[in-house]
Every structure is written in C-alpha cells, then in structure tokens.
Length: 154
Image (cartoon, rainbow, N blue to C red; front, side):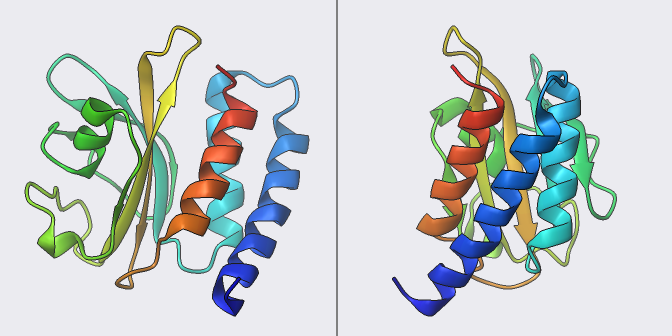
C-alpha cells in the first residue's frame, strides 16, 4: 500500500469508528448529517460533502457540510450519472466530465456513490468534491462504501 493510501486509510478508519459510534439509534437523516460532519472535519482534501436525493426530474440537496451547494441539479452530472448507473464514479478532473454541473468553481475532482434501500432502489447519492485534481481513488471508494454499508445496510 502506498504511503498516501495508508494515510487515507488511517483517516477513514478514525472517521468510520466515530461515525458508527455517533450514528447508533439515529434516524437516516441524522446518520447522513453525522457522516457529512465527521468526514468534512477529518479529511483535509474534502471541500464539500453531502447527499442528493433523486426526484422525478432532478436531484435535491440533502444533508451536507462545506460551502453552499446547488439546491437542485440535473441528472446530467456526476451525481445524476451515479444515480442512473447505480455505481460509484470517480472523476479526477471535473472539467473533463461531460455534463458536469458546476456548483462551486473551486471543485476540481469528485467522487459519488449510490445509496440503496433494502429493495435495491437508489434513494440517495453521496457526493464529495475536492479543490485538487485527482484527490479520489480506490481507497476513498472502498472506505466510503464501507461507511455507507454500515449506516444504510441493505
């Protein structure tokens, strides 16, 4: 494991333990708020972190941490494609992602993961933006999937 991945894993492991402990007995909305707050406070390269909820024609902003974000976004962007494709998307350079929705011009890279209910329906998209290019990789994806599975078991 590279040093960078090792450092990321240590930070995520700390977050995982804190989120799991604080989320016990909480509602889904409260668990989302806890996840956003803990990750934003502990992962240095996170500019913005939050959830979007799929609606009929757009995604609607849910719990988040960081600078103000778009209240509604179309299905054309990273989050929309994640919801439609039902798979995580890692974007090293958002300027090269066709259909990218710019909510904050400081955002340079992004990762988005679907959140499923027990029936397998996508009920939310978890999204993270960074001010640096190439911030996210497999280590981020694996830890975020693990945290989401802990908070929202299917």
